[in-house]
Image 1: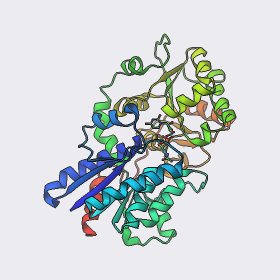
Image 2 (image 1 turned 90 degrees about the vertical axis):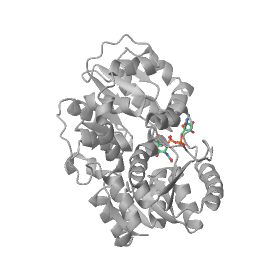
Image 3 (image 1 turned 90 degrees about the horizontal axis):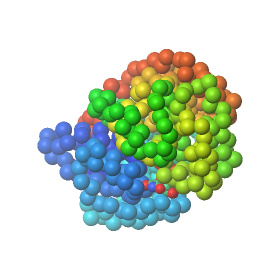
Image 4 (image 1 turned 180 degrees about the horizontal axis):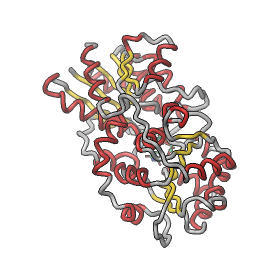
Length: 378
Ligand code: UD1
């Protein structure tokens, strides 16, 4: 059987690790040929290639080299390039991963060409149609033949949307698989070494406690006044919380910070903000595990913090991952970009001992369950 998987961005790789390892485990038994395609949505070493090497993943056979651009252009270019690959390879299954533009291009192209399509991380919904990821998820789910869902809530959402129960497989979370496979290696990373290796600023640091901060959503960075408000909160209103903020900065956000002169303001801040280049997965896992709390707008970090029992304050109005919310047993609270709420929730997070959310099916075998169900559908 020939399986063709398409990866595009950094978080895809985390889920792909689990998928690729499950395929390797069953490769002989099921005579699998695995073709790997990289769309080129993320192309920087720090955003993609370094992580690929870190996990010692198999060679990529096709690089579409699409790069950055408007969403329509990016998705269109990926479709044009992927169509050529699918014509040559003629796979039994095409696999799309999560909710990024690469997944949308993969899903639509595969279906236009009548290939069977499996979707890793299906069934997530934020019900916020202003998010590009929400369109992507809905569209990919509705053209998929096999939908791997991480939890019961996502399963129920797909049923409610009319997707046939026989096409939905409650596998669990592929990202959790990779986390459990990586946690002991992450434990060997020295946080001080990570800081000196990736530092964008040259502060004198005696690391005591810190909050881990990440930011990249359009809703927080596109409007200059929103971005400014968040940065001012970090610079001026952090008192009474952790001694340090550690922030691995997304390259797109760094560009924006430089254009708006906020980068200079951050460098001039009192020394409590540690700016880093994007760090590798193991270092990030170690930084997350030892943070007093995490302040973020990332999807993956909401899940990782709930798995690890680290409090998480999410700068979004909604989440497609409600299973991570405190009221559902996780460690996550939503604050949007309301500074008062952010301030209060960060203070509460500091004084709160997180509880690990033992979510069913997140114990580390999601990818294997997915692969076996794919064979059952043959
Ligand atoms: C994308 C996903 C988002 C995911 C995130 C993970 C979509 C719609 N968005 O957002 O869901 O959470 O990846 O990081 O698919 N850039 C670089 N180097 C790179 C890649 C991007 O400098 O290797 C810069 C470019 O200026 C680019 C900008 O970052 O225009 C945004 O990149 P893009 O892939 O469009 O979106 P992300 O914000 O990374």
